[in-house]
Amino acid sequence: MPVRPDHTHPNALEVRGIGRRFGGFWAVQDVSLTVRPGERRAILGPNGAGKTSLFNVLTGDLAPSAGTICLFGQDVTRTPIHKRIRRGLRRTYQHAHLFDGLTVRDTLLLAVAGVQGSWAQIWPVRQSDARRAEAERLAEVAGVEGLLDREVANLSHGQRRQLEIGIALAENPQILLLDEPAAGLSPAERPKLSALLKALPTDVAVVLIEHDMEIALQTSESVSVLYNGRMLAEGTPEAIMQNEKVHQVYIGGAHG
Ligand SMILES: Nc1ncnc2c1ncn2[C@@H]1O[C@H](COP(=O)(O)OP(=O)(O)OP(=O)(O)O)[C@@H](O)[C@H]1O
Image 1 (tube, rainbow, N blue to C red):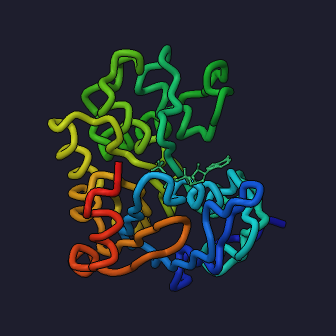
Image 2: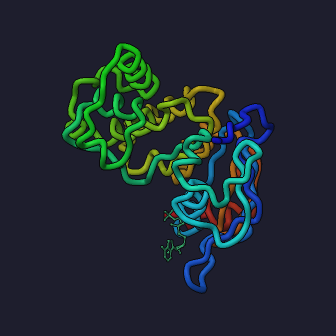
């Protein structure tokens, strides 16, 4: 029988002593972190700090070499991706996973129907008024409501990133992991993404990997800084801005 996630638990995500080794090299080492329901947390760190590897372990894309992961108090360290999804965890990737030949509306309808991966290219989704309404609601949250009939191939880079966030919000996730949503955006597209992140539903915990310091600090209430696979510092955006160690390895120009 499926275990129902307890979404009233004080911690949406609890990570203890997580490590991930590639051969003899620890890409992530002894990382612990707690995220409350609805919290907005940024993960910063220079190139190669271990941010994406940590995300991959949290989602189940990669198995950890050490440590435990709990979602709403339930241990999911060895739980496969699709079951973590059922427990309310979603992610976006650094490089968009979208199908160019579909319209924005069809892309969101498929997400609402729970159709994922390459099935989305061929799956005949049954449309109902409820599904159409939900797809339109997601388009609005993601700021692509004016583009519903446009083919994905004809979206700008920024619009694709917004659509990805809309997809990730289908079926009301409780924890959203966003892997560099601002990567590759033009300076003009960045404020729009920042506004979209700030306007995400307040009950959804958002963990965001971001190189753009301004976006990360503007949209988050807490920040974790990784360096060489380890947690270097944690705190409010203000505390992180003033942290000497963070200045040395990250703000001081070490990031790419
Ligand atoms: N599959 C892999 N095999 C071997 N080493 C890997 C693998 N994936 C990541 N690494 C190494 O682990 C370290 C952390 O990489 P990771 O991509 O997690 O860092 P990151 O902080 O996300 O970097 P970036 O900001 O550049 O995306 C790097 O040294 C990387 O080369």
